[in-house]
Amino acid sequence: MRSSVFGNLEGQGLPGGFVLQNGKMLRVELPSEVLAKQGSMVAFQGQMDFDYEGGGLGKLLKKAVTGEGAALMRVRGQGLLYLADNADDIHLFFLENEGLTVNGRNLLAFQPSLTWDIKRVQGAGMAAGGLFNTTVTGTGWVAVTTHGTPVLLDAARMPTYVDAQSAVCWSTQLEVGVNRTVKMGALIGRGSGEAMQLAFRGQGFVLVQASEGPPVVKATS
Image (tube, rainbow, N blue to C red; front, side):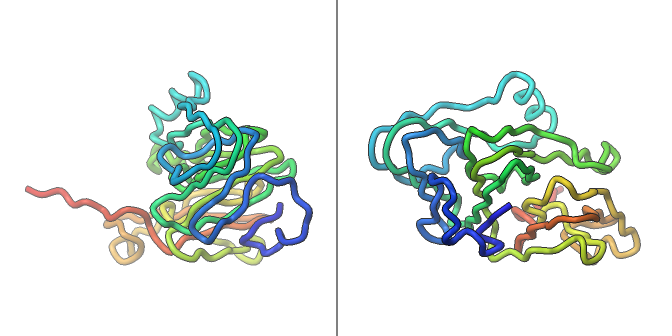
């Protein structure tokens, strides 16, 4: 796997298509097709068509049941497409017959040569809130967004625990479970009472953003 996060994209002669216009904007070169987050188009030059992408009945049902998976659009045409999402930082990954698990809200765009699906996070059953993420596999480009500058954690060095809302993406070969912290539940993360983190072990990485997602809205009486 090669990535702008790893710093190993420059001069590698990778197939064209995805280029960082700047740290917060992605430029996609067509002709080709691209799957992108709905509403992420900020400009385009040339001729392009934008269509809703449901991914089939099975994926639509998974989205409805789990709430996971970004609403996608399929873009076809010729020219230059510019994508961004709320001025978040953008990071590129080039998969070479590999897999990447991504938090659906952080998935900006990917090439249709990749296969995607919504899968339950290993070890996180319904008792843990039924955690589901989007997995992309194959060969091609993936663009993800982070709120602020992320940190890349090597799970092979030691057991790694990450707030579920802060975990942007990780290697699919990692073993993933759930770690519960009861006594300090009101002190760590943004939750109260029992706290839960994703636990990672094995050979691979986890990309963690400097945010736990949108603010928690407290119920009013």
